[in-house]
Image 1 (tube, helix red, strand yellow):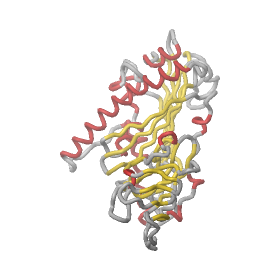
Image 2 (cartoon, rainbow, N blue to C red):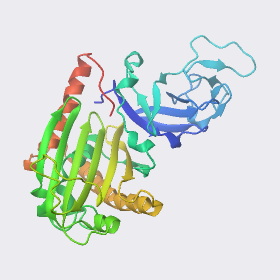
Image 3 (cartoon, one colour):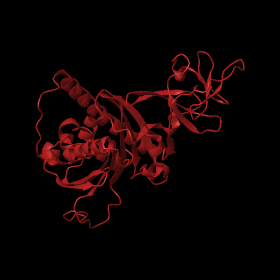
Image 4 (spheres, rainbow, N blue to C red):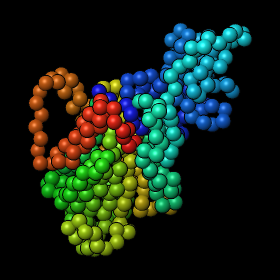
Length: 355
């Protein structure tokens, strides 16, 4: 079951050009395109004439032209041309979806269009700040329910097991025993996680050249139904930046990155993972930004392998019980936030924030 009255990421802005772009979202076929003015539109990917996917057509000055018999649909889904000058049937139209282009994303509203409040779309200004936060981004299709991806991001105790050679480091105990504070928010949950006087992981050493031990932080916020915002980094140990979650000294210098994680359901057991890495330590060095992206990609491909295998096992035995352990606190809060939104939608109450 999907939350429909919410904003989801449909694509990166640079994915959409004047060529039809097909994508299945919440198990509905969508086609996105830019019209002659550069504005983005999202339509049902099915011509109302003979059911042909509109993504097989092309963009023309008047809109999107079906590649089978040439009907043209404007950004609102209305047929504006039947070739040969024939009369356009009054019900010749396809469903259109509200879309907003913001902060390098194309956001889509899959529910009741009258409730599509663009002010609910979260802000992510770091994608627009190339000077201080140069970034790279991509999309991974993943064969799992999107909430398994959120689960993975909400329980970081796995870092010391799966990501030893990249962002995790060689000590699983470091992650299991990290100092952690979890706080529920109106739209989800936030957690702060600190590993003091610890050995820096290989990715951090490559990026910032640490020579000794570090104080390391990870700040995550889940915004339901599918966004996770992350700020992670480290500075040389002993600078006094952490005092029982009352932060002291400056976190400037050392290593710092921001990660955007966006999970959009494709189907019940498949999703799109939109992610970006923003370099906050060697901002004037394009090589550093590219190397950071490659390091994170290595780690995320390890996650992809795990969650896809996890989904396969769950599909084999969907009734098998799963237990919760001490590291599941933030994950459980995230699941409950989504459950609350599903209950609210079923009760026809107010729409939810972007995710």
